[in-house]
Amino acid sequence: MHTSQRLISPPSFLSIVSHHPSFLLLSTRLFSTQQDVYRANLNITALSRAGNINAARQLFDKTSPKDIVTWNSMLTAYWQNGFIEHSKTLFHSMPIKNIVSWNSIITACIQNNNLNDAFSYFTSMPEKNAASYNAMMSGFVKMGCVEEAQKLFEEMPRPNVVSYTVMIDGYAKMEGGIRRARALFDAMPNRNEVSWTVMISGLVENELYEEAWELFVRMPLKNVVACTAMITGFCKQGKINEAWNLFQQIPCRDCASWNIMITGYAQNGRGEEALNLFSQMVRTGMQPDDLTFVSIFTACASLALLDEGRQTNALVIKHGFHSDLSVSNALVTMYSKCGEIVNSELAFGQISHPDIVSWNTIIAGFAQHGLYDRARYYFDHMVAVGVTPDGITFLNLLSACCRAGKVDETMNIFNLMVHNYGIPPRSEHYSCIVDVMSRAGQLKRACKVIQEMPFKADSSIWGALLVGCNIHSNVKLGELAAGSILNLDPYNAGAYVMMSNIYAAAGKWKDVNRVRYLMKEQGVKKQTAYSWMQIENKLHCFVGGDPSHPNIDDIHDALRRITLHMKVKGNPEEEAIS
DNA sequence: CGAGAGCCAT
Image 1 (cartoon, chains in turn orange, cyan):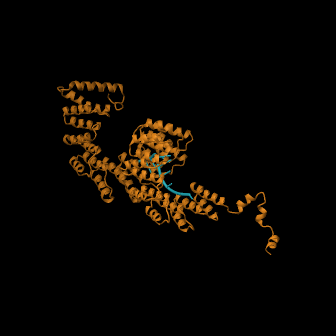
Image 2 (tube, helix red, strand yellow):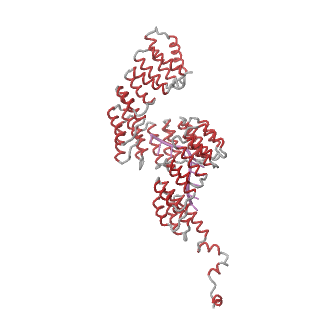
Image 3 (tube, helix red, strand yellow):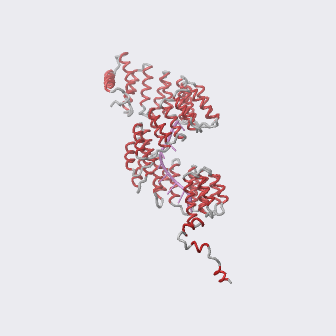
């Protein structure tokens, strides 16, 4: 009978253990509970975030039964560790999928810059939520397809704060799109701190400083990311004191905020302070990262601080960043800017997989040291190992060749760039050509290049011509070049000096004096004592040669000032004449 | 378990 059978049957295992005090402990070991799966899922994610993808996979295999979150965690673990194909395989073998699985695989493709795959997953998913649209939109924005993103934004049912934020980011990064970004920001129903940060950062990027600051002041809770964006803006404008003030007000400084402050000092010629800040950073217990070392090397490079650069090189090894590509590239730059081309080359040689920046850096180093043959050797070498040169590679090679005075060779390189590599030449490339031709005395040919360029010449191109006119004493073309520069930039002290040189060489003393007055009238802000000295030295020569000059008093006055200045100041370049 | 932000070498 049923009941009797039950009565005589031995007590089940469960009925015993469930009354035992250690029941809970046993049950977690022997049975999978809801909590176990939950814990396993969290651990898969934690292991993945620690970069331990194998352990994550082992735990995934051990977890049984798996729920949808287990599958999704493993899916995400794979692509976040760079195993995109594993993600795809797993996705297609999943017994059940939910929206999160689809969203994750879309994000995986986008991280891998595969917009086509992402979009085909997006279109074939059974139903979409806001995150699906947001992921796809951010993919389009990342690849610069803002219009495509906008289409999705308009057709999605209920855009949320992230959707708006993605669009604002897209518009802000688009050429001339900052007003649209701002309009959308003003129109959005509610904002969170990321929306504020994206908008402020976009304004900073577009160099609308004042507007960025207005918004920053209005931002309810200023987080460290927004502060860092704002500090970046200050540093770009050279307002290093404002940057420092804001930096000091950040309650919880992180590595990135220290980095930008160090970079800010380095790029504004205050390398000592950058290095001091670095030791302060280390003292506060903040761990430097790769970008910190890049900033420090930049500081050392800009001030040619070789000893500090060497010390930092040792620190890099101590902190284990010696195989980091950006750090290594910055190290190569540091040595070459400190005049240590041999060490620069050695540092380059230690890079296991040099990228385009590494190659460009070493070529630039040889260019700066006037060693065209070595630059060319590395150029040929990079092409031989299959790295495609870009516009910067060619600029470096052109400037090396130009400094060597090889006109035909420079033109060959230029043509190679345009015709074989299809790289559209920029103003800097033309500048090299005009420079080499002008120095070689081929002034007419240089003028022809300027005339036939696809865009208007800037002051550096005219400057290259002007240098040639100075060397080869061509007053007429010199006037054209100097005049063009001063049309673009009336405060260009170099143009005044160079032109006065040309006039002086031609014995046109009245014109030298005219240039001098012109410079004074314009109120040239950057009129360094050195610029004045050069012009007035020319007039000094003249005083000796022809004392019947009508403005002799001015010249004597000028000479008195020059003499005084040289007595008081050791280095006349340092101080502007008031 | 899914979507959005700052600092980077030529």
